[in-house]
Image 1 (cartoon, helix red, strand yellow):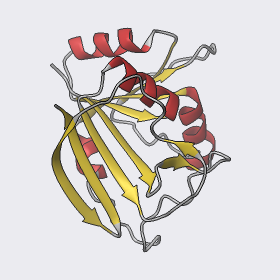
Image 2: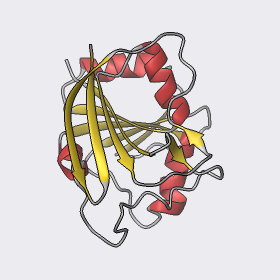
Image 3: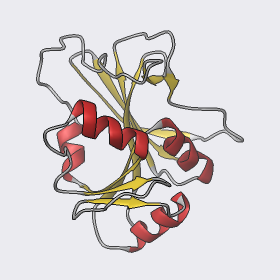
Image 4: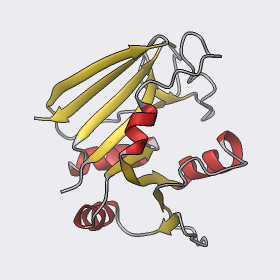
Length: 176
């Protein structure tokens, strides 16, 4: 069965975006550096990316307007909007748990929960995430969009590994 992995960056104080949704703070302690740590290794094992429409829109219009950043993967955008799917981007109104169940049943690599916070928290509430890969960015935002919302129950985890590069600390956990 394929793993569902949350791979996301957050500020030291637990935010994934500033209050206005911006993510310009995501660089490490040397923002001009090109050390992407574990990201490229992780992405090489991913065949499906799952995200909400807000994350898709931010990627398409602000962060990567000239080229889609995941051309080797199929991106599944959760939305109630009517949008035209393409070869590598599928817009879907399918319930999140049904989508994940369908993807798990297919051949392929890992399933990446890319964002945003609403999608992440739904996945946590539904118990869908097998591995949490959190990159802690050396920035304290003080306010913004929290990665983790209020949960109905605790989620016990087991530390698998840590890595650090450019002031960023990667924490990798699995469900216990």
